[in-house]
Length: 412
Ligand SMILES: C[C@H](O)[C@H](O)[C@@H](O)C(=O)CO
Ligand SMILES: [Mn+2]
Image (tube, rainbow, N blue to C red):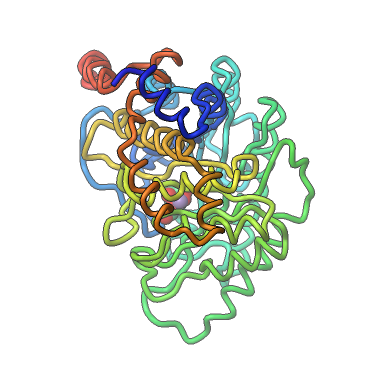
């Protein structure tokens, strides 16, 4: 079916396809830089990845420098429709200076800002509270040793300043997201004290008011990590409470809950009590495995929640996965295109009609329409959108990735 025929089918249900595509082009996805080099970064490249997260695979061609990483991001972004953001971790500083992480400054990231300006991109940021000698025992912001805790507090304070610098320079807010690995492998006796220390640390970190037009703070929970199976200090309840009390953004990572628990079902509630949400769109398989995002039911449900409750202005959509067993650029492209495509599909559903029949208790029509719309020809609309936005249509992008792999990645 071609675009015009598909468009007519949607229009029969009052869906204005041109308006849908216009609104889709405004949705920004934050592309996580760490997919490009297996979460190594540039500050401490000999340090192994810690913090209870893990990258498997040894596909050739990982970026070794900030310049290579930007080159790879450019390539990926050229195959993703729209204008987006890039999400940096503190370890991706682009500097020759040997700098302690608690002393990081905006100047250590100026090449990233210059590049983002040239490309019209936004930047997001994260303090890196792992892969460091001072996090070796698994604790950072909740550490019982005050000097170590202080080091991480200073690192997070520095990170917010860097975020605010990004936001000011680029004219769009930077979301600075705090995630820490702190937790116990085995059952703790005192579950409270580390949480009290974490709250104290966060209060210190957020004490300075920053302009929300430049920097927005987010906090990210987790149910368990490798080595923190029994107890994670920053649990969902902890950060949900903190975000509501302090009016911070709550980061919901799709892989950070019990295996049958979904973040899509949390968006409506969280949106009522926090000023915003940061999404880490990811794909857990049996655990927080950080697989590349595919077009599965949960991705569709996340997109539907954003669309049905119009949460776009307060929800920041980031990706979070790291797969080193496939071409890393393809991983970005597959995950980002799927996320945008899922939002398009959600926008092409007759939401008002569905809400109306639900209110009327016509659950037969609700089920019938939801199911029929699953096979409506969204693919023709997607292809048209890609063409209009000047990016490869369908799997054409894969040839470009293969050529780039041969010409660039395999020569590294
Ligand atoms: C590298 C990121 O900070 C990390 O993935 C974090 O967001 C997370 O999800 C940890 O499991
Ligand atoms: Mn995450």
